[in-house]
Amino acid sequence: MEVLKLVLKGIDLSSNNNDLNFKKYDGDIIIYKLTGGASYFWKENKIKDALSKGFLVGCYHFAHEYGKIVNSRVQAEYFYKHYKPYLGKVYPILDYEIALNGKNFTQHDLNWIDNFMIEFHKLSGVYPMLYCSKSLILANRVPKFTKHNCPLWFAQYANTNPTGWQSNPWTDSNNVDMIVIGQQYSSNGCLSSIQGAVDLSQFYISKKGWLLSCKSHKQGVLF
Image (tube, rainbow, N blue to C red; front, side, top):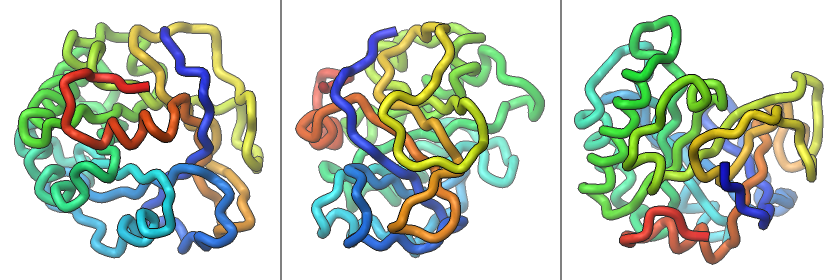
């Protein structure tokens, strides 16, 4: 497992969260849910506002929204349709949390992910980030394209206690066969800039690397 050393603070937001007070927000990165499955689009996202305030911004596609399994090409095309206005400015992310069989993750899920990544890159020229549980990666073989081109932002929590920003969050000692770009370490974050719990993450990438990763490029992972 290769991990970047630079650390940026970030949150991810969906329609389940309250509005973020940009003036009070002391993080570096804001990630918004953009699409899900082949039909969900969060039109009330604040991507343009976050960009105008100078934050690093990402947006994610939630695979298999509503538990409906739709093939990877269709979902990649749907994500790209709504991502296209932000091409070159916003980091695209695949959020993978629902197993194809509805129960447990298998190699078929990693193969689906790989096909999504390949298709999205064909459409956009951008290599997406992958968000998923660490256990999904540990239990299966990561296909070549995703392994070498798409960095991992994994979720793993020490507990569910309320917390603020952490500089050295807990993770187990198991190494994943991917380049790690970030860790979501809490789903119960407490920040003065937003009411209610929020997901907290740290990312191991420079601001320059994040911005370059939003653009079409030949190299898969940019530091």
